[in-house]
Image 1 (spheres, rainbow, N blue to C red):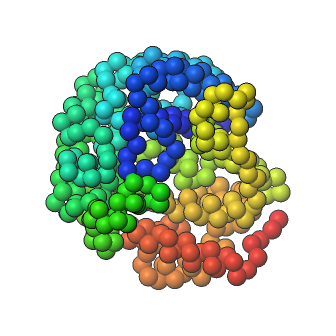
Image 2: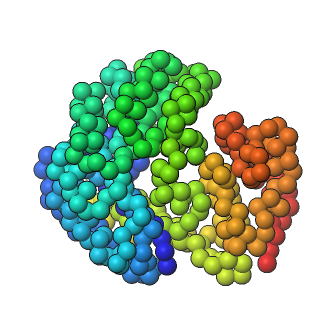
Amino acid sequence: MTASLYIHIPFCAKKCDYCDFYSLPAGTGSGRLFDLFTEKLLEDIGGQLRAFHVTEPASVYIGGGTPSLLGPQRMKTLLGFLSTAGGRHPPGEFTVEVNPESLDENFLRVCREGGVTRISCGVQTFDEWARRAIGRQGNVRRLGAALALLNEAYGGSFSADLISGLPAQDESVLLRDIETLLRYGPSHVSLYDLTVEEKTPLYRNASLSKLALPPAEQAARLWIAGRDFLEAAGYRQYEVSNFAPDGKRSAHNIVYWRMGTWLGAGPSASGTIVRGGGATLSGLRRTVKTDVRRYISVPGTETVTEHLDRNTLIRESFLMGFRYAEGPDAALFRQRFGCALESLVPETLARWRARGKMRNGLCALNREGLLMLNRFLTECFTEMDRSLLPRE
């Protein structure tokens, strides 16, 4: 079976105030913990590759957390294992996330020599005040040095994340962030609208009026201004929040948006395995339990598994597929479910085409339609709920 692989490294030097991903603060003295974690991670990855008969990982993405906190030697061990555990064929795209504060030349050398084809760097903003307001570690000077180092010592392609809608951010600040980033020549940019998740320090501060965030309408205008600036610079929007020149899209993330099959290793990582079609269709979601200490100490890997029925897979194909500029994979959808996607929501599609929100000749939202993705999906699911989904 061909599948992609996501590996979660659940450690951060400091958790940002807006983050609700699973990670633990890891400061000085964490070396032994990192060693034990790396050892268990190799066992987890190897066990899954064997269990699901994956001989050719289509792509690998090492995220977190902060993978670069593992340091060069542990990353070398991990990359060396991956180069042999998946069979003879290296992945077509191999990404490692880094934070500027834990990036150095040795780490980049290990990545380059270990077959990593893409570095993903968390930038977020070059505005010093905004960085402090969201609890972002480091400073702008260190950030610039890290991006320069990426160009000098790595030489491969790198992607970067930016956030719009930050405290006190206006259009001039956001566009200056984008302009500054583009000077370093990223091959890919993700522009995320700040989401305030419950149970995060950012949520508490905003609720207590300790932090002023842009109103929703202003935040939306900000993001659109950023989108337009990126597209004018040659970075085409190919997904709700992702931009790249032609030929530079993230192959690994496209697996998610096209509802492919991927495995997830490491605490809180989730994988989805979809097999067959028609009467033989089956779906399985496997999520590693969120507990680093038990992950390390308990034999085997504790997971929560969910069997995905046909209707769930159809809905998820809509949820993920319509994020993508080309829409869901029509051929794959028909192969899996025995019907055309258009046959399930003809009324919704007709309305949105009449509104001018669909791409010509495609079952996909255009750039203005993507701004209203949630509303579109709500209408799709409402229409589905009014009638029975076709059965084989």
